Amino acid sequence: MLPICAAIHDLSCYAKSSLTVVLPVLESMGIETCPLPTALLSTQTDGFDSYYFRDTTIELEGILDSWKQLSLRYDTVYSGFLGSEHQVQLIMQFITQQRKLGSPLVLVDPVLGDDAALYGPITKGHVESMRSLIHAADIITPNTTEAALLLGLPFQEQFEEQEALSWAGKLSLLTGAQVAITSVPLSEGFAVACHTEGKQLLVPYTHVDASYPGCGDLFASILLGNLLHKHSFQTSVIRAVSYTSLAIERTQKSGRERRLGVSPTLILPDLSLERAR
Image 1 (tube, rainbow, N blue to C red):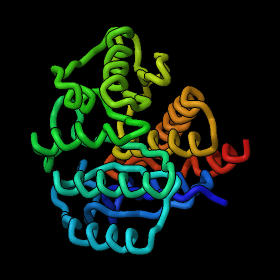
Image 2: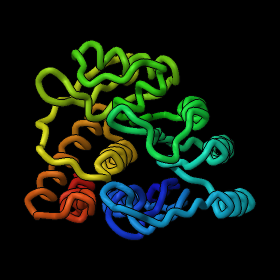
Image 3: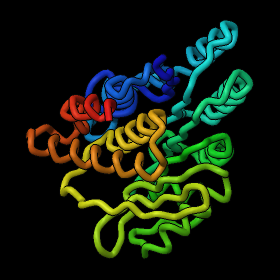
Image 4: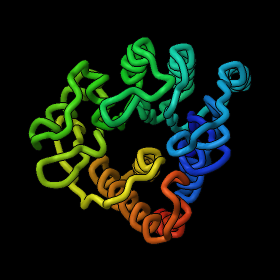
């Protein structure tokens, strides 16, 4: 049977980010994916002068209640953007309920901010709630801004290698989760700083001179897909870094407008072949 994933994230009706990245990637990797939208947007938010935003907390409550009544069980839970403290509490309750039914693999991407700033709808109370949610995770994938917020440390523009690994270790010690801190700027290049089962590792990569919305969602989805196919955490991170970089390179070469986001479509055939490995 195919693994079944509850994918909890916002849904943009135009341009690629969040669920419009998560769904095709996980499905191409052989993961049956059930979307649970936390918000509905006309477009993704980066690069558009205006957009429609609808909070879907009421719908979220109704769907989660229906799932509970039906005793639906998921092999994995992927939590991304949560638009309020209340939504965080709902997802914590959902994870607790799922753990009573089985042993789901829980990945929390703590979507809070980037470039040393909070995203528009995120509050200090929201950050506090997210600090609680990550304790329910098996894997967390913050960027450096989110890692600083979760640890209560100052934002940093650059890291020494051991310092980045130390942050990953602190998050793992705090939560008991496996940690992958993405887009870590080092004195020479970039890397993902990881902590898994008491071990630290740094996965460097060549930085592509391009930035697209949705790259973090792409990385977390590929990481999760590989873990569900029983690859080690280290191998899963390496593959997620490799395919995310490939998607950015192909998106840039295609001439795609930046605000349309990274294009997962350009690597879906590769991910389908990866599934068979």
